[in-house]
Length: 479
Ligand code: ATP
Image 1 (cartoon, rainbow, N blue to C red):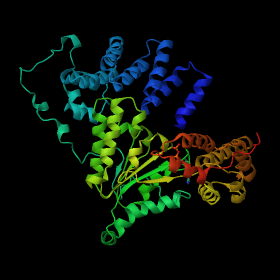
Image 2: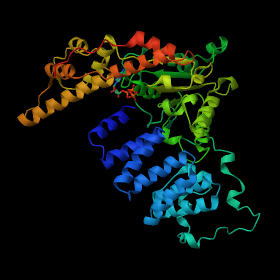
Image 3: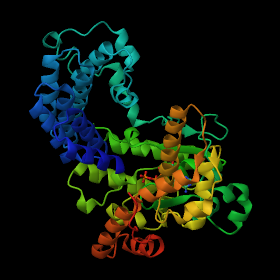
Image 4: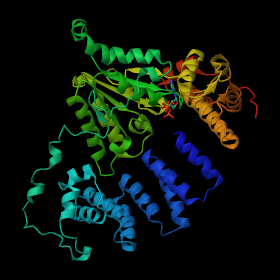
């Protein structure tokens, strides 16, 4: 959210900046804000009608909206101008798959793979029953008009299509960030790197760490392992950091999934990807499954117009359903800045039945974060208490900004003087006093939502968080 806002702010300053418009379009596309994405790409096309990236951007939006013929026209337009545009061929392949034209989809995939020797798209490859490497090995594809439409006898099913590999998905499939215990690539962050959040740390221990340490005890008390924990709160207060720290703390498999591993324009594939991710977690239990950006996956269905997105939410609810008992020993952790935008059905028992608010750090927590940020930095006479007093309402990210900015200023002074100088308390305090904490905007939004929220939503949590965590309004700060 914050990056979208930053691009929007920049666009206000230069509304016709093509690079910014493209950046915004792609960021919106990733967040599935399809109309905003389309508007941004169309604006680029008004400024430069031959812009390939913008044309393909619109095509992707249309495909997600189910307007396959519009998407095909856009992709074909790009191919007409540049027959060697691999991305356009790939997109056309997806459109043709939606339209059930597997043969032509395959041809465009082969062409894309031959043009781009680095191309790899495991999901599409599985869908087509063809790896990019094999596609490259086949002879160069003939020009589209010479491609025979159907080279098989009527009724004959080509061998590679006889069994759809997706009918029986390989459950040992690993998303990009699957880490077994002891995997050297596993994030080396642990609870010790996260200031505060004691309630959450204990909840994670109770749900997954203690059950692994004391299985008999848990069995004796009939306590189940795993479940769902939702963490929410203002940006920059350490939700992502905490989710990464779980990797360093839990003695079991850890699977963290990015939206790019789930979303796929091909109709039905997004739900299938989500299913495979849950299957992977279940097949590798005990496992923690991390879904950092819940906003796009778990939207309130009443606010969603596209049927594809509603299907995704339904699938997600189905996967979360503890009633089937298959999620035993899987802990699903999700994070959001906007709990009010989530579908209330996620709060039913067995799904995200635990919602934990991550407030802006209080004074003791700020002291802990300051100690973590000051570690290994040359600071003269660090006065933690003074810095804590100067930073009410600051998020962890705001505190990090203070240290980063003070380091930059000191570095610049050191370069000019040619002498190494430590960061002074005066510089830290000056930066802190000039900085407005970023959490206030979130609380304003939360207040607004709490006011209008229906009782079946997260209103209770939001009201509770307002009473717990709202910092006092910012004081007049020195420039
Ligand atoms: P967003 O919702 O915008 O993604 P977030 O709540 O996930 O924000 P993080 O990205 O985890 O916030 O925090 C940004 C940075 O701020 C962290 O990488 C870390 O350097 C610092 N930080 C935030 N909270 C803490 C904390 N409790 N302890 C230590 N560092 C923190």
